[in-house]
Length: 121
Image (cartoon, rainbow, N blue to C red; front, side):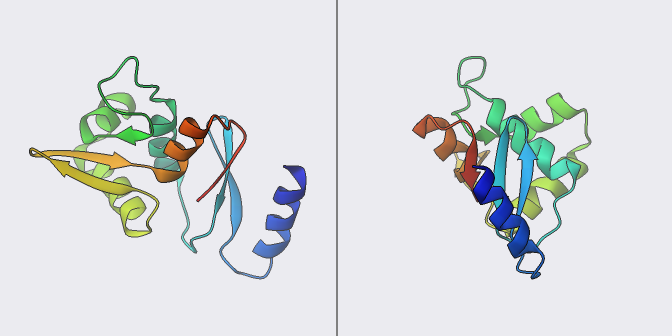
């Protein structure tokens, strides 16, 4: 794992957009040339912490209500964070019977594969 983090650090000096970020207990490799702020990281951490036992949401997902309840944010602030993650392909939107569910493939893959250290975005 350390070798990967060092290699990504060297790539980032080239301006390629690759970098490592800590989201909760996981180090994620980000490959999109976008600056993620603490709001984006918090949304991904909420998805990471959903284990499917305390919520009816599947693992690796969030909905607007959960983001707002967990963070205390306004709907506008939560939507702004989710929209950027959607636009960069870091989240997927599932519309079902009028409900919006945001899936985080890197978090979902990490949870379902049993990995707990590094996930690739």
